[in-house]
Amino acid sequence: MKRYARRSPGQAFSRAAVSDARPPLDPLVVPALPKAEVAARIRARIAEAPAPRAPFRRRLALAFIAVPLAILTGLVGSCIALPGRHLLRVDIWQIPRADFAERLLLLVLLASLTTGIALLPGRRSLGSKVALLAIAAVALAPLYTLVTHVAPVGTSVGDEAARALHPLGLPCASVAFAVGTIALIAFGLALRRAVPAAPVNRAAALGAAAGGWAGVALFLQCPAKDELHLLVGHSLPVAAFALLGALVLPRVLRP
Amino acid sequence: MDADQVMRRYAGGDDAAFDELYTALSPRLYAFCVRLAGRNGDAEDLFQDAFFKLHRSRATYVSGANVLHWAFAIVRSTHLDRLRRRARRPEKLVASTDDGLEAIVATSGSPEAELHAETLARIVEQELQRMSERNRSAYILLRIEGLSVNEAAAVLGTTGEAVKQRAFRAYEALREALARAGFQQGSRV
Image (tube, rainbow over all chains, first blue to last red):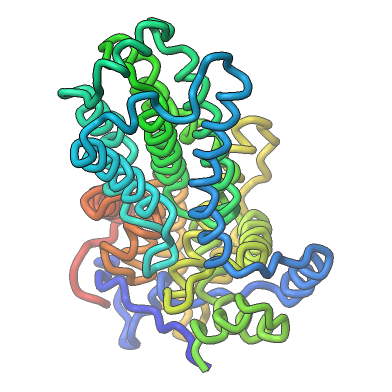
Protein backbone atom coordinates (compact mmCIF):
# COMPACT_ATOMS: atom_id res chain seq x y z
CA MET A 1 0.00 0.00 0.00
CA LYS A 2 1.26 3.43 -0.85
CA ARG A 3 1.91 5.64 2.12
CA TYR A 4 2.29 9.31 1.66
CA ALA A 5 5.91 10.38 1.94
CA ARG A 6 6.64 13.55 3.82
CA ARG A 7 8.73 16.21 2.15
CA SER A 8 11.39 17.97 4.18
CA PRO A 9 10.59 21.48 5.38
CA GLY A 10 13.89 22.36 3.79
CA GLN A 11 15.10 24.81 6.38
CA ALA A 12 17.30 23.74 9.24
CA PHE A 13 18.05 25.55 12.44
CA SER A 14 21.05 24.84 14.59
CA ARG A 15 22.22 26.14 17.91
CA ALA A 16 25.61 27.72 17.45
CA ALA A 17 27.18 26.13 20.50
CA VAL A 18 25.97 22.60 19.86
CA SER A 19 27.75 20.30 17.51
CA ASP A 20 27.25 16.66 16.84
CA ALA A 21 28.75 14.44 14.22
CA ARG A 22 25.49 12.63 13.51
CA PRO A 23 22.88 14.07 11.22
CA PRO A 24 20.41 16.12 13.22
CA LEU A 25 17.00 14.94 14.29
CA ASP A 26 14.47 16.99 12.51
CA PRO A 27 11.55 17.37 14.91
CA LEU A 28 9.23 18.34 12.11
CA VAL A 29 9.62 15.31 9.89
CA VAL A 30 9.30 12.39 12.32
CA PRO A 31 5.78 10.95 12.16
CA ALA A 32 3.60 10.52 15.21
CA LEU A 33 1.14 7.65 15.56
CA PRO A 34 -2.19 7.62 17.33
CA LYS A 35 -2.62 5.18 20.23
CA ALA A 36 -4.07 1.79 19.34
CA GLU A 37 -7.25 2.37 21.33
CA VAL A 38 -8.03 5.46 19.21
CA ALA A 39 -8.63 3.24 16.17
CA ALA A 40 -10.90 1.03 18.27
CA ARG A 41 -12.88 4.05 19.44
CA ILE A 42 -13.26 5.30 15.85
CA ARG A 43 -14.44 1.86 14.72
CA ALA A 44 -17.00 1.80 17.53
CA ARG A 45 -18.35 5.22 16.55
CA ILE A 46 -18.51 4.25 12.89
CA ALA A 47 -20.38 1.06 13.72
CA GLU A 48 -23.00 3.12 15.56
CA ALA A 49 -23.43 5.59 12.70
CA PRO A 50 -23.30 4.01 9.27
CA ALA A 51 -22.61 6.56 6.55
CA PRO A 52 -25.13 7.27 3.79
CA ARG A 53 -24.18 5.47 0.61
CA ALA A 54 -26.19 7.44 -1.94
CA PRO A 55 -23.73 8.29 -4.70
CA PHE A 56 -22.67 11.92 -4.67
CA ARG A 57 -23.31 12.28 -8.39
CA ARG A 58 -26.92 11.26 -7.86
CA ARG A 59 -27.29 13.91 -5.17
CA LEU A 60 -25.88 16.56 -7.50
CA ALA A 61 -28.10 15.43 -10.36
CA LEU A 62 -31.16 15.65 -8.10
CA ALA A 63 -30.20 19.20 -7.16
CA PHE A 64 -30.10 20.20 -10.83
CA ILE A 65 -33.46 18.48 -11.41
CA ALA A 66 -34.92 20.35 -8.43
CA VAL A 67 -34.34 23.72 -10.14
CA PRO A 68 -37.11 23.51 -12.81
CA LEU A 69 -39.39 21.95 -10.20
CA ALA A 70 -38.72 24.90 -7.88
CA ILE A 71 -39.55 27.37 -10.66
CA LEU A 72 -42.72 25.48 -11.58
CA THR A 73 -43.81 25.22 -7.94
CA GLY A 74 -43.19 28.93 -7.38
CA LEU A 75 -45.10 30.00 -10.48
CA VAL A 76 -48.05 27.65 -9.97
CA GLY A 77 -48.12 28.38 -6.24
CA SER A 78 -48.21 32.13 -6.84
CA CYS A 79 -51.17 31.71 -9.24
CA ILE A 80 -53.06 29.92 -6.50
CA ALA A 81 -51.98 32.04 -3.56
CA LEU A 82 -51.94 35.51 -5.13
CA PRO A 83 -55.25 36.50 -6.77
CA GLY A 84 -54.96 37.94 -10.30
CA ARG A 85 -51.46 36.62 -10.87
CA HIS A 86 -50.83 34.80 -14.15
CA LEU A 87 -48.71 31.69 -14.53
CA LEU A 88 -46.54 33.40 -17.18
CA ARG A 89 -46.27 37.08 -18.12
CA VAL A 90 -49.35 38.21 -20.02
CA ASP A 91 -47.37 39.55 -22.96
CA ILE A 92 -45.23 36.43 -23.39
CA TRP A 93 -46.66 35.65 -26.86
CA GLN A 94 -46.47 39.29 -28.05
CA ILE A 95 -42.82 39.98 -27.19
CA PRO A 96 -40.47 39.53 -30.19
CA ARG A 97 -39.22 35.95 -29.87
CA ALA A 98 -35.57 36.79 -30.45
CA ASP A 99 -35.49 39.49 -27.74
CA PHE A 100 -37.25 37.32 -25.21
CA ALA A 101 -35.18 34.22 -25.97
CA GLU A 102 -31.95 36.20 -25.82
CA ARG A 103 -32.71 37.63 -22.35
CA LEU A 104 -34.02 34.34 -21.02
CA LEU A 105 -30.99 32.48 -22.33
CA LEU A 106 -28.67 35.02 -20.70
CA LEU A 107 -30.43 34.67 -17.34
CA VAL A 108 -30.48 30.87 -17.52
CA LEU A 109 -26.81 30.89 -18.50
CA LEU A 110 -25.92 33.13 -15.56
CA ALA A 111 -27.85 31.00 -13.09
CA SER A 112 -26.47 27.75 -14.56
CA LEU A 113 -22.90 29.01 -14.42
CA THR A 114 -23.27 30.12 -10.82
CA THR A 115 -24.90 26.80 -9.92
CA GLY A 116 -22.08 24.87 -11.57
CA ILE A 117 -19.38 26.88 -9.80
CA ALA A 118 -21.12 26.50 -6.45
CA LEU A 119 -22.24 22.90 -6.70
CA LEU A 120 -19.59 20.93 -8.54
CA PRO A 121 -16.84 19.36 -6.42
CA GLY A 122 -13.92 20.01 -8.77
CA ARG A 123 -11.02 17.65 -9.32
CA ARG A 124 -9.77 17.97 -5.73
CA SER A 125 -13.17 17.17 -4.20
CA LEU A 126 -12.86 20.52 -2.41
CA GLY A 127 -15.05 22.63 -4.70
CA SER A 128 -14.24 25.51 -7.01
CA LYS A 129 -11.47 27.97 -6.24
CA VAL A 130 -12.38 30.36 -3.48
CA ALA A 131 -11.95 33.44 -5.69
CA LEU A 132 -14.32 31.97 -8.26
CA LEU A 133 -16.88 31.24 -5.55
CA ALA A 134 -16.62 34.81 -4.28
CA ILE A 135 -17.07 36.23 -7.78
CA ALA A 136 -20.07 33.97 -8.38
CA ALA A 137 -21.66 35.03 -5.11
CA VAL A 138 -21.11 38.75 -5.64
CA ALA A 139 -21.52 39.16 -9.41
CA LEU A 140 -24.82 37.43 -10.09
CA ALA A 141 -27.17 40.09 -8.69
CA PRO A 142 -25.57 43.04 -10.56
CA LEU A 143 -25.47 41.04 -13.79
CA TYR A 144 -29.10 40.02 -13.33
CA THR A 145 -29.99 43.68 -12.77
CA LEU A 146 -28.08 44.65 -15.89
CA VAL A 147 -29.82 42.07 -18.07
CA THR A 148 -33.34 42.81 -16.81
CA HIS A 149 -33.18 46.59 -16.21
CA VAL A 150 -31.39 47.87 -19.29
CA ALA A 151 -34.02 48.25 -22.05
CA PRO A 152 -36.43 45.74 -20.47
CA VAL A 153 -38.37 43.60 -22.91
CA GLY A 154 -42.16 43.96 -23.08
CA THR A 155 -45.15 45.24 -25.02
CA SER A 156 -48.06 47.58 -24.40
CA VAL A 157 -50.12 44.58 -23.23
CA GLY A 158 -47.55 43.95 -20.54
CA ASP A 159 -47.37 47.63 -19.60
CA GLU A 160 -51.15 47.67 -19.14
CA ALA A 161 -51.00 44.63 -16.86
CA ALA A 162 -48.01 46.04 -14.96
CA ARG A 163 -50.05 49.07 -13.83
CA ALA A 164 -52.05 46.77 -11.57
CA LEU A 165 -48.92 45.39 -9.92
CA HIS A 166 -47.61 46.40 -6.51
CA PRO A 167 -45.28 49.41 -7.01
CA LEU A 168 -42.54 47.83 -4.88
CA GLY A 169 -43.10 44.36 -6.28
CA LEU A 170 -43.67 42.70 -2.94
CA PRO A 171 -45.70 39.81 -4.44
CA CYS A 172 -42.81 39.26 -6.87
CA ALA A 173 -40.40 39.19 -3.92
CA SER A 174 -42.55 36.52 -2.28
CA VAL A 175 -42.47 34.41 -5.47
CA ALA A 176 -38.70 34.84 -5.60
CA PHE A 177 -38.49 33.80 -1.96
CA ALA A 178 -40.49 30.63 -2.62
CA VAL A 179 -38.49 29.58 -5.70
CA GLY A 180 -35.14 30.50 -4.13
CA THR A 181 -35.90 28.69 -0.90
CA ILE A 182 -36.80 25.44 -2.66
CA ALA A 183 -33.64 25.66 -4.80
CA LEU A 184 -31.50 26.52 -1.77
CA ILE A 185 -32.84 23.55 0.20
CA ALA A 186 -32.13 21.26 -2.76
CA PHE A 187 -28.57 22.60 -3.09
CA GLY A 188 -28.02 22.33 0.67
CA LEU A 189 -29.16 18.71 0.71
CA ALA A 190 -26.97 17.88 -2.28
CA LEU A 191 -23.86 19.25 -0.57
CA ARG A 192 -24.78 18.23 2.98
CA ARG A 193 -21.56 17.41 4.90
CA ALA A 194 -19.60 17.65 1.65
CA VAL A 195 -17.77 20.97 2.00
CA PRO A 196 -14.71 20.81 4.25
CA ALA A 197 -13.05 23.90 2.76
CA ALA A 198 -14.47 27.45 2.40
CA PRO A 199 -18.03 26.56 3.43
CA VAL A 200 -19.10 30.21 3.75
CA ASN A 201 -17.98 31.09 0.21
CA ARG A 202 -19.59 27.94 -1.14
CA ALA A 203 -22.80 28.67 0.76
CA ALA A 204 -22.91 32.26 -0.54
CA ALA A 205 -22.40 31.02 -4.11
CA LEU A 206 -25.17 28.44 -3.64
CA GLY A 207 -27.42 31.20 -2.29
CA ALA A 208 -26.61 33.37 -5.31
CA ALA A 209 -27.42 30.45 -7.62
CA ALA A 210 -30.76 29.92 -5.88
CA GLY A 211 -31.42 33.65 -6.23
CA GLY A 212 -30.51 33.45 -9.92
CA TRP A 213 -33.15 30.77 -10.53
CA ALA A 214 -35.68 32.85 -8.59
CA GLY A 215 -34.81 35.71 -10.96
CA VAL A 216 -35.49 33.48 -13.97
CA ALA A 217 -38.93 32.65 -12.55
CA LEU A 218 -39.71 36.35 -12.11
CA PHE A 219 -38.61 37.11 -15.66
CA LEU A 220 -41.01 34.45 -16.92
CA GLN A 221 -43.91 35.74 -14.87
CA CYS A 222 -43.71 39.48 -14.30
CA PRO A 223 -44.10 42.04 -17.14
CA ALA A 224 -43.11 45.07 -15.00
CA LYS A 225 -40.66 47.64 -16.40
CA ASP A 226 -40.80 50.12 -13.54
CA GLU A 227 -37.33 50.71 -12.05
CA LEU A 228 -38.44 50.63 -8.41
CA HIS A 229 -40.49 47.49 -8.93
CA LEU A 230 -37.61 45.73 -10.69
CA LEU A 231 -35.11 46.83 -8.09
CA VAL A 232 -37.04 45.97 -4.93
CA GLY A 233 -39.20 43.12 -6.19
CA HIS A 234 -36.72 41.37 -8.48
CA SER A 235 -33.07 42.34 -7.96
CA LEU A 236 -33.09 42.72 -4.18
CA PRO A 237 -34.36 39.17 -3.51
CA VAL A 238 -31.77 37.79 -5.95
CA ALA A 239 -29.02 39.60 -4.03
CA ALA A 240 -30.51 38.68 -0.65
CA PHE A 241 -30.23 34.97 -1.37
CA ALA A 242 -26.44 35.13 -1.51
CA LEU A 243 -26.47 36.63 1.98
CA LEU A 244 -29.08 34.15 3.18
CA GLY A 245 -26.99 31.26 1.88
CA ALA A 246 -23.86 32.55 3.58
CA LEU A 247 -25.72 32.87 6.88
CA VAL A 248 -27.74 29.67 6.90
CA LEU A 249 -25.98 27.01 4.85
CA PRO A 250 -22.40 26.69 6.20
CA ARG A 251 -23.54 24.53 9.14
CA VAL A 252 -25.28 22.14 6.77
CA LEU A 253 -22.36 21.99 4.38
CA ARG A 254 -19.53 21.28 6.84
CA PRO A 255 -18.62 17.57 7.24
CA MET B 1 -2.98 -0.32 -3.79
CA ASP B 2 -2.66 3.39 -3.02
CA ALA B 3 -4.74 5.36 -0.55
CA ASP B 4 -6.79 7.06 -3.27
CA GLN B 5 -7.92 3.69 -4.60
CA VAL B 6 -8.70 2.46 -1.10
CA MET B 7 -10.75 5.61 -0.49
CA ARG B 8 -12.58 5.07 -3.75
CA ARG B 9 -13.58 1.60 -2.54
CA TYR B 10 -14.56 2.97 0.86
CA ALA B 11 -16.58 5.77 -0.70
CA GLY B 12 -18.36 3.17 -2.80
CA GLY B 13 -19.57 1.46 0.37
CA ASP B 14 -16.86 -1.17 0.92
CA ASP B 15 -16.64 -1.15 4.73
CA ALA B 16 -13.78 -3.63 4.67
CA ALA B 17 -11.53 -0.93 3.21
CA PHE B 18 -11.60 1.02 6.47
CA ASP B 19 -8.58 -0.73 8.02
CA GLU B 20 -6.46 -0.17 4.92
CA LEU B 21 -7.54 3.45 4.78
CA TYR B 22 -6.78 3.96 8.45
CA THR B 23 -3.32 2.43 8.07
CA ALA B 24 -2.57 4.59 5.05
CA LEU B 25 -3.82 7.90 6.42
CA SER B 26 -3.45 7.84 10.18
CA PRO B 27 0.29 8.69 10.52
CA ARG B 28 0.03 11.87 8.44
CA LEU B 29 -3.40 12.86 9.74
CA TYR B 30 -2.48 12.30 13.37
CA ALA B 31 0.73 14.32 13.01
CA PHE B 32 -1.34 17.08 11.40
CA CYS B 33 -3.78 16.94 14.32
CA VAL B 34 -0.94 17.15 16.88
CA ARG B 35 0.51 20.20 15.18
CA LEU B 36 -2.86 21.84 14.72
CA ALA B 37 -4.33 21.19 18.16
CA GLY B 38 -1.15 21.15 20.18
CA ARG B 39 -2.13 19.33 23.34
CA ASN B 40 -2.09 15.61 22.95
CA GLY B 41 -5.53 14.89 24.41
CA ASP B 42 -6.97 17.50 22.08
CA ALA B 43 -5.09 16.05 19.12
CA GLU B 44 -6.50 12.60 19.81
CA ASP B 45 -10.04 13.93 20.10
CA LEU B 46 -9.57 15.96 16.95
CA PHE B 47 -8.19 12.94 15.08
CA GLN B 48 -11.09 10.81 16.25
CA ASP B 49 -13.72 13.41 15.33
CA ALA B 50 -12.11 14.07 11.97
CA PHE B 51 -11.88 10.40 11.05
CA PHE B 52 -15.50 9.94 12.03
CA LYS B 53 -16.49 12.89 9.82
CA LEU B 54 -14.40 11.48 7.00
CA HIS B 55 -16.42 8.29 7.32
CA ARG B 56 -19.71 10.20 7.48
CA SER B 57 -18.97 12.15 4.32
CA ARG B 58 -17.22 9.35 2.45
CA ALA B 59 -19.89 9.28 -0.26
CA THR B 60 -18.94 12.85 -1.20
CA TYR B 61 -15.34 11.95 -2.01
CA VAL B 62 -14.77 12.40 -5.72
CA SER B 63 -12.83 9.64 -7.37
CA GLY B 64 -9.42 10.82 -8.53
CA ALA B 65 -8.99 13.51 -5.88
CA ASN B 66 -6.06 13.33 -3.50
CA VAL B 67 -7.55 11.67 -0.44
CA LEU B 68 -4.90 13.05 1.91
CA HIS B 69 -5.61 16.65 0.92
CA TRP B 70 -9.34 16.01 1.25
CA ALA B 71 -8.74 14.51 4.69
CA PHE B 72 -6.55 17.48 5.70
CA ALA B 73 -9.46 19.78 4.82
CA ILE B 74 -11.80 17.68 6.98
CA VAL B 75 -9.34 17.78 9.90
CA ARG B 76 -9.03 21.53 9.63
CA SER B 77 -12.78 22.00 9.35
CA THR B 78 -13.24 19.82 12.44
CA HIS B 79 -10.59 21.82 14.27
CA LEU B 80 -12.35 25.10 13.44
CA ASP B 81 -15.66 23.63 14.64
CA ARG B 82 -14.03 22.70 17.93
CA LEU B 83 -12.54 26.18 18.30
CA ARG B 84 -15.95 27.74 17.62
CA ARG B 85 -17.61 25.44 20.16
CA ARG B 86 -14.94 26.27 22.70
CA ALA B 87 -15.39 30.00 22.09
CA ARG B 88 -19.12 29.62 22.79
CA ARG B 89 -18.62 27.42 25.85
CA PRO B 90 -15.19 28.20 27.29
CA GLU B 91 -13.78 25.26 29.18
CA LYS B 92 -10.98 25.13 31.68
CA LEU B 93 -7.86 24.38 29.73
CA VAL B 94 -5.64 21.58 30.93
CA ALA B 95 -1.99 22.45 31.16
CA SER B 96 -0.10 21.47 28.08
CA THR B 97 1.74 18.20 28.31
CA ASP B 98 4.76 17.16 26.34
CA ASP B 99 3.16 13.92 25.20
CA GLY B 100 2.52 15.36 21.79
CA LEU B 101 6.09 16.46 21.50
CA GLU B 102 7.34 13.10 22.57
CA ALA B 103 5.21 11.60 19.89
CA ILE B 104 6.74 13.86 17.30
CA VAL B 105 10.37 13.66 18.44
CA ALA B 106 11.49 10.12 17.90
CA THR B 107 14.75 9.25 19.57
CA SER B 108 17.38 7.81 17.34
CA GLY B 109 20.54 9.83 17.88
CA SER B 110 23.00 10.70 20.64
CA PRO B 111 21.71 12.21 23.91
CA GLU B 112 23.10 15.59 22.88
CA ALA B 113 21.38 15.46 19.51
CA GLU B 114 18.17 14.28 21.13
CA LEU B 115 18.27 17.15 23.59
CA HIS B 116 18.97 19.53 20.75
CA ALA B 117 16.07 18.20 18.70
CA GLU B 118 13.73 18.20 21.69
CA THR B 119 14.54 21.82 22.53
CA LEU B 120 14.06 22.78 18.91
CA ALA B 121 10.78 20.89 18.73
CA ARG B 122 9.54 22.48 21.97
CA ILE B 123 10.25 25.98 20.70
CA VAL B 124 8.62 25.25 17.35
CA GLU B 125 5.63 23.64 19.05
CA GLN B 126 5.17 26.53 21.48
CA GLU B 127 5.52 29.14 18.79
CA LEU B 128 3.10 27.27 16.48
CA GLN B 129 0.53 27.22 19.27
CA ARG B 130 1.07 30.90 19.96
CA MET B 131 0.41 32.07 16.40
CA SER B 132 -3.02 32.40 14.79
CA GLU B 133 -4.71 29.27 13.51
CA ARG B 134 -4.62 30.64 9.96
CA ASN B 135 -0.89 31.19 9.97
CA ARG B 136 -0.25 27.90 11.73
CA SER B 137 -2.28 25.77 9.32
CA ALA B 138 -0.78 27.49 6.28
CA TYR B 139 2.75 26.91 7.62
CA ILE B 140 2.08 23.27 8.51
CA LEU B 141 0.62 22.43 5.12
CA LEU B 142 3.26 24.27 3.11
CA ARG B 143 6.45 23.75 5.06
CA ILE B 144 5.84 20.54 6.97
CA GLU B 145 3.34 18.53 4.93
CA GLY B 146 4.92 19.69 1.71
CA LEU B 147 1.79 20.72 -0.17
CA SER B 148 2.09 23.13 -3.07
CA VAL B 149 0.66 26.64 -2.68
CA ASN B 150 -2.37 25.74 -4.81
CA GLU B 151 -2.99 22.51 -2.91
CA ALA B 152 -2.74 24.28 0.45
CA ALA B 153 -5.05 27.03 -0.81
CA ALA B 154 -7.65 24.42 -1.78
CA VAL B 155 -7.39 22.68 1.59
CA LEU B 156 -7.63 25.96 3.53
CA GLY B 157 -10.32 27.42 1.29
CA THR B 158 -8.42 30.56 0.44
CA THR B 159 -6.26 32.04 -2.30
CA GLY B 160 -2.68 31.07 -3.04
CA GLU B 161 -1.52 34.58 -2.25
CA ALA B 162 -3.15 34.46 1.19
CA VAL B 163 -1.51 31.09 1.89
CA LYS B 164 1.91 32.48 0.99
CA GLN B 165 1.42 35.50 3.24
CA ARG B 166 0.19 33.43 6.18
CA ALA B 167 3.01 30.92 5.86
CA PHE B 168 5.54 33.72 5.60
CA ARG B 169 4.20 35.36 8.76
CA ALA B 170 4.37 32.02 10.57
CA TYR B 171 7.88 31.39 9.30
CA GLU B 172 9.02 34.81 10.48
CA ALA B 173 7.52 34.20 13.91
CA LEU B 174 9.29 30.83 14.16
CA ARG B 175 12.57 32.31 12.96
CA GLU B 176 12.41 35.05 15.59
CA ALA B 177 11.50 32.58 18.34
CA LEU B 178 14.41 30.31 17.43
CA ALA B 179 16.78 33.25 17.18
CA ARG B 180 15.71 34.39 20.66
CA ALA B 181 16.46 30.89 21.95
CA GLY B 182 19.97 31.00 20.50
CA PHE B 183 19.41 28.96 17.36
CA GLN B 184 20.79 30.40 14.20
CA GLN B 185 19.44 29.87 10.72
CA GLY B 186 21.60 28.12 8.18
CA SER B 187 23.70 25.02 8.08
CA ARG B 188 22.71 21.86 9.85
CA VAL B 189 24.85 20.82 12.80
